[in-house]
Amino acid sequence: MTLRQAQGPRPAQGAEEDIRAGRTSLGIEFGSTRIKACLIGPNATDVLATGSFAWENRLEDGLWTYGLDEVWQGLQAAYADLVGDAEKRHGARPETFGAIGVSAMMHGYLAFDAQGELLVPFRTWRNTNTGAAAAELSDLLGVNIPLRWSIAHLHQAVLDGEGHVPDLHHVTTLAGHVHEKLTGERVLGVGDASGMFPIDSTTGDYDERMLAAYDSVAVDRLPASVRRLLPAVLPAGAPAGALTADGAALLDPTGALRPGIPFCPPEGDAGTGMVATNSVSPRTGNVSAGTSIFAMVVLERPLAVPHDELDLVTTPAGDAVAMVHCNNGASELAAWAGLFSRFSAAAGQPLDEDAVFDTLFREALGGEADAGGLLAYNHLAGEPIAGLTEGRPLFVRTPDSAFTLANFARAQLYGVFGTLALGMQVLAAEGVQLDRMFAHGGMFRTAGVAQRFLAGALDAPVAVGELASEGGAWGIAVLASYLPHADDSSLSEYLERDVFAAASLSVSDPDPADVEGFATYLDRYRSGLTIEAAATTAL
Image 1 (tube, rainbow, N blue to C red):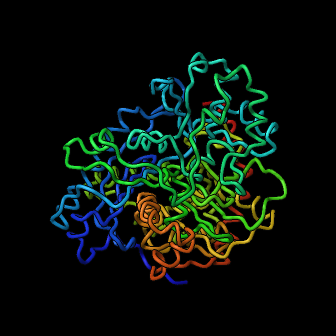
Image 2: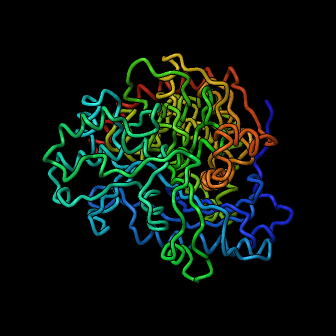
């Protein structure tokens, strides 16, 4: 096993001149808890500046949402933070860029009327109120339609007879909406579009048979055909408009940013995660862990049958991908870290959040391979793969289990991977093989802990790399930098040759004891789902 902790942004030679001349690419990603901006140089591995803004979803009238005012506040704050970072590090404030890209959380429902007014509050991917629609659509189309997909949200609104439906003019994702406000273009990258409606990978567009099938049941129930309601689809490398004067003022209210900058197609966080981990070729895959956790595996061939646990999406280039998406990731782990942080402060020995995480993670290495009989559920929201429409975080033990801090920490880490492992077992049963699984997200910053446990959970080598440390914001910046190369290189060729050729990776091979221990834990986890179901009824 080779281990190397991911490093932060690297300084680049000639960065000041590159920034002033606009020989850079800007990526902006709206994540679940942070809006991040990332500036890269002509060499995509050179991260010149970063910026961020913290935000949180909220539960309103039973639905998870973010306010659109927060979108623009956060966008401007993250951009201003990046500009300040560029000036601090390189003595230059950017006024233009070679290209810009926008990415965001996939799926969900943003519905607008003909005047561009939002008809109902933004419904995020986290909502699980679309069960009836998803089931009906899955039967109609012959593929699994997840609860969080945009078409499921749209059809649920139709089934519920919501008053806004007759006024619908278009539906889009968060990345698509921000892109449209900045460029005037109503388009989506194919990866993000694949979370709205099924994509035909042979055409790189929405599946025509399925569009017709849906129109046949939605006739007289929607004001237009479903295709007209959806954004146009573009592959990676296709021109997707340019920054307008209004868009420049929206992004940078100081007036320093000049319009006319080209944009790449807006993408979803799954697609940028694939780019950030060089996982866009068949037999490669990645795991992204944040508020949610999901695995993406690029397929060599179609799956034999549909599976409720698996979504079929695409890479930013349009290749078929099997996705295991779990609504709940590391948030419950973070909540426990916050509890320990407060304890340290109350004891007069305060530790910051990073130190608490580092301590807990390293303590977990000393735990028993099966976490000593302890069991942790990270379900803050519903979890379709586990058959749960609501979430109740739980920690459970028996009187004879080994209740130690090390086992507790390991159980919490295992809990992050529990539902994901259930879905990955379905993929393995289909005979899907992997040459490499790449992991990214904040929980992998402590070298050799979460990475090792994930390798045990998947029984496969897991790599992490320094380039993925900037995550999806860097991934969408790379997609922006790909624009001038699309005519002579495929996306996979560009990543291999121009981005990842000299990248250093740390690879953790599965430890047989971890594999056996996690399998025992997962059996307990699967059996204990009845406790979770009971908790959602009782509490």
